[in-house]
Picture (cartoon, one colour):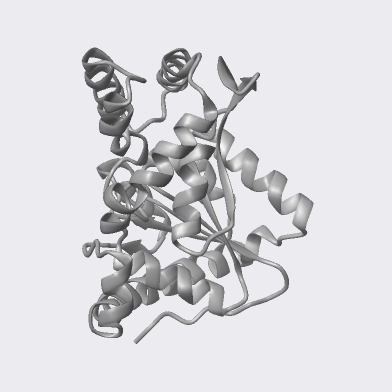
Length: 272
């Protein structure tokens, strides 16, 4: 039984990307072709993977850790040609990302779109990576990190780092520009670093949550969704409804219970 969403006014569904929509890190996924094309060396590959691991293990909530990760990535990309990065992403997207899209996430995205709701990817990865991934999923709106570009190359400065509180800031700015009612909006993430994002909307859900986020979700009565079936786009279309419907059934039961608990808490809070 698929999820059914009530559409009231203008609203949107905001999806974190890594481990929420795809079963891997979008930034690290392109490490191999970046290395192959000479943009990074072996040491950079190891350091990038380590930085990503430490960020995730720490829950990504430490502002100094986020700043270090931001500055490291900015320095790493300095001097890269933007068109070269875009070409690498375009050439390897089907191989490196498509097979790892969760069928449950794709079905949930389709449910929101069918309800007339805008769907937005919100990711700390670079816009040059996130936007093509969005296009793969039929999503045109993204909030992603942006590097300063000078003469077609990255300058080593960060224009906007879409991590932690900055994700929520980007969501609020988009909501203000488009007239979204955030109380009617949805958000999905796996990490406690995205608590500001989840708290910014009326309908937050934890997806494959870290231990810390799971604890927060249980305490607040948020739905907890488990996505377990990464399937390439071709198979999602060919096998429909076999895998997606089975996946959505599990999501629907969990979400229905969570949404009922969350709605009850909101009613109690309003009456207090």
